[in-house]
Image 1 (cartoon, rainbow, N blue to C red):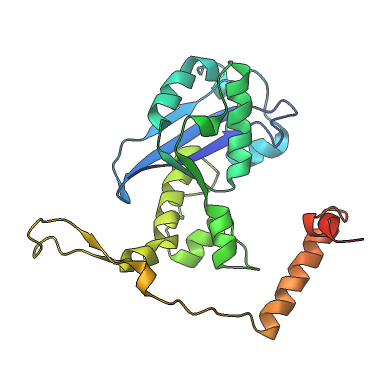
Image 2 (image 1 turned 180 degrees about the vertical axis):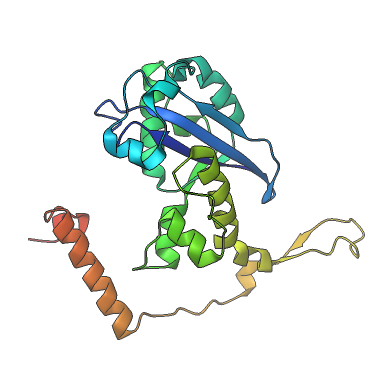
Length: 234
């Protein structure tokens, strides 16, 4: 199975507001192994980065002046990604920017070019509810060495995220039995998971309280516009 771990850096936070991608980094996984077949571009966004964004990625406007524009490398990027499962941390952000860049050059939305998108932030929130699930926090929690990450960089972050993803999904390996040496066919045989009855673990009072507190904080931060408030019956 071919998977691509992708990250971008941008001039700011709003694709709809005119912010652009300035860097895209991708690393390839085949059967959960890094292949070294990476893709990396710095891009001329045709506008300056916001001051806050500069503090995050440290990529100067001057450095980007002679870099290719997205339109010049769009076909190469899509050829590289085509039909792969794409793994992104906080996928809505990156996909939103990619969609806008593709729209500018008259191409179809990002998800039409790939087999699917997996959001590691959503995975981490399910696995570690109520905890910080930034890339740095996950590196610390999962034992991924991020000591070289002083600033955000798309290729470095994609490489770190690949390690994080493999660690997040490592438990899946335990469900596979490699009997290649003893099987007549030499194939890898998989366990039929339908034979297992998995236990349902319910939250305790402390976890429920922490969950309610987190919802209250999110509700406050959004000014009372959270989905669960708007969807609540009158």
